[in-house]
Every structure is written in C-alpha cells, then in structure tokens.
Length: 81
Image 1: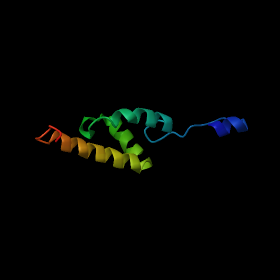
Image 2: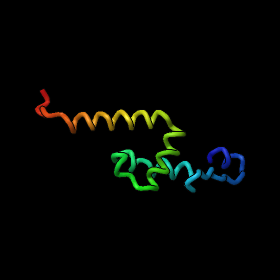
Image 3: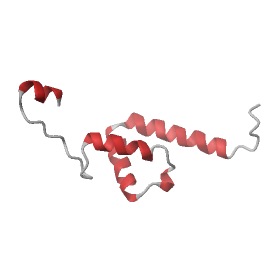
Image 4: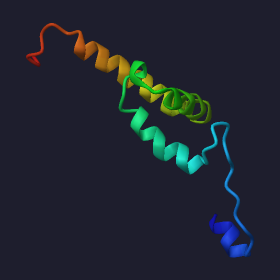
C-alpha cells in the first residue's frame, strides 16, 4: 500500500477465497484463535483453513496452546505444586 502511494498508483488489495482481504483475515482470525476449534462457526473454520495455509507457524502455536489447555483442564491436582 505504501509503495503504491509513493508511485502514485491505485492500490488493489488481494481478495482471498472467502472474500476477505488479508488485512480482514488477520483482524477477524484473532477471535477464532481464542476459541476451541469445536466452538468455531463455519466462517471461522473457513478463515482458519486459509490462515493456517498462509501462516503455518500460527497453526503450530494454536495447536500447542490447545494441547496445553487440554492438559490443564484434565489435570486432577490444580494446586500448582
């Protein structure tokens, strides 16, 4: 966008498969990353597929966080020691 502005040409955002721009995808995806995959809406599922294809590191981080959450939820001793 900055480069287009400097050159004086019109900027056209790339539109993804779900109709969102990359900026919209990233903004909306932050909400799905806080939820369990089982609680995602259909639109969030579609966004997650695109997000995880483009950013495999985010997929890895999400998967690890969900596993850690599962371990904590299923731990019998929650005293911390």
